[in-house]
Length: 337
Image (cartoon, rainbow, N blue to C red):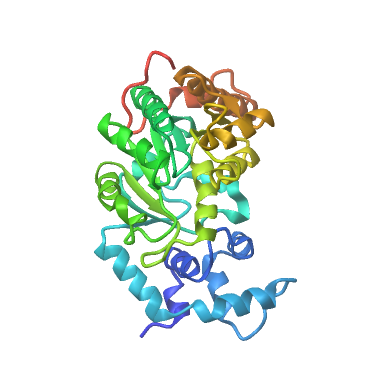
């Protein structure tokens, strides 16, 4: 049997091992990978010598018991059996936008479906999320805006949950568009169970994505950390409905930290399901969304900002991004672009 260090000699396998042993968003492990690489990070976890640094002893004691050759081989076998891919930085379809998370970036991403959905420009992806206990109003408005986004050649991202998330995925699929479900557990454990069929359709016609290996169960912490991926993967986050203390606001906060615009849909003053959206608008943290034109304007702002950055960096009057061809998953650009 291979030793753990022999398995970890391959960068991809080393990242798989670390994703099994760590929780999403583990900044200490992320910093180690950035500094010495994934292979050396595994070596330091299982070494007799305590790694240098203020967190070295605690970090090693936390991760070492979770690193196991048999478990790593099982996860690799399950990944292949379920037809998943493991993406790591440097892969063609690795979403470079998640690198903005720094040491909190995912070590690897398990994917099932069309990974080319991750390789297009950031402003061609829109995250739509909101309350699980959504209202008819929220689902109706979500459907209308997602239909418009699909017609405008945007991929729609959400978290696969009940309520607004489910409405976003279903509408994107029904409209012939592209949708990505970012899950808080292993892709072999669709959650919630009531969306098993819907998530299977997303995996067939769109993309299922998770930073957790097969077999991993969703937890409260993993749901919260999933929000940072939804924020990092798209050019704009749209909050359709949210309670005053909804976990959806965590996704909005992560987007704001990353400099991504947040849109919030206003609702009835008497609706508790819209209190979180009103809170974002009151505090000046979100832009009011009254129709798809408002969303397009936010996405165009991200696009224009990226173009300006390229021109400033290269000193060119024309932006190379303007010449970029759309990815294979995109329709021709709409007249609005």
